[in-house]
Length: 387
Image (cartoon, rainbow, N blue to C red; front, top):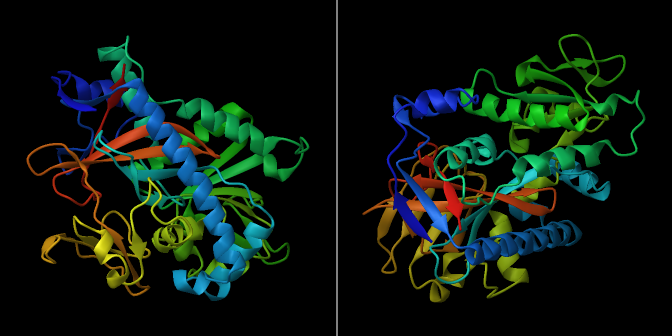
């Protein structure tokens, strides 16, 4: 695993815009970065793929245990949210995708940092943008990337056994608009769904209506919403005015409500309890004292529902603060995790590896680089290859 320096294409902006990547920069600063790339061996990629598949299986076992042992309250999941989680798991509502964020620097096993299982982004960059970069600059190399094939295959699975006139063959896709990044990911998923045989409608989350006579969610054309992919967090949905209608709407959501467990940082403590000292896990608990002796590099405190690095504090081994980010999360509680050794992307910069799961199978890799220790919403996406 090596970070290689490579001159960016002189026309890289127009090159990525030509394939639909119109959110390559934020506030004039490049989000997409191609003056460097990460190079792996085939063995390292095999190891990352195996680790992600194994971690996903463990996570699914953890979801079952949390529900069966009635631990949802530890996750801050109560009331309506708890009902929706339990019911969707009992029905085994199907899931689409997720991103496991891993700490890995080429030495030792990859370690799970968290599971972005409900509303992960950077999918388009991982599936399409870095692939076109590879084809242009290193066509003889390979890339851990069968994301598009996996997505189309998964969407086809979701259509199996559904009659031709069934409204579930139409997929509504929704997020908060306008938002270049979210809409870019939404458009890509819509294209994959169309390739698989769905018909689709894309709409703003604010434009979803409720028909009181039929007790169904509807779009702007009063078309019933039978299946919806939403790039909108479940913990926000259950607090909306329409949240009370979700259970009786008969709408099937992607991602399903049980993903609230996986996307919650409390899953880290649950996993460590179920699989202590597993090679791919970092010690984690609700109290720092429980894992301090197993955290030689220090500890990290994470808000249970934190996003994009908000409300994360990293402590050195001596207890001093190495880095901290403020935010609007934390009322729901925190979890503590042993600090991991991250890949170095510069004197102070670090890289986190995101392995994408489509259905239950690892299908690709995306790498984000931060200028410090915490990966935030202003980090950079960097491509990769392997030989």
